[in-house]
Amino acid sequence: MNAVNDGFKGAILFVFMWLLIVSLTDASWYSGLTTFEGTVEAIGRELFSNYIFQFEVIAVLLLAAMVGAIYLAKKETAK
Image 1 (cartoon, rainbow, N blue to C red):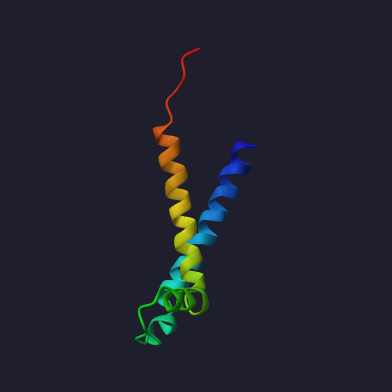
Image 2 (cartoon, rainbow, N blue to C red):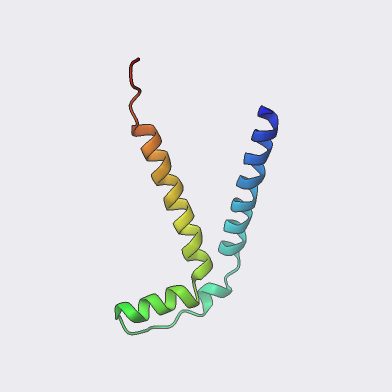
């Protein structure tokens, strides 16, 4: 059962790393950069229309870092 869990974790990690590498090596999302007004609405519109995949990848990475930090900071209780 432990080997199955390790294989599943490895497959999930492989998929996330593949998606990250594909999004970073495909420069088409970078070539379309244009200047835009600096309002919060314009920045939000740009993030959620042209850069949604990169935004979601960063959100998942930050969530994983937050969960890992909470796990490491958790103290063991003595019984």
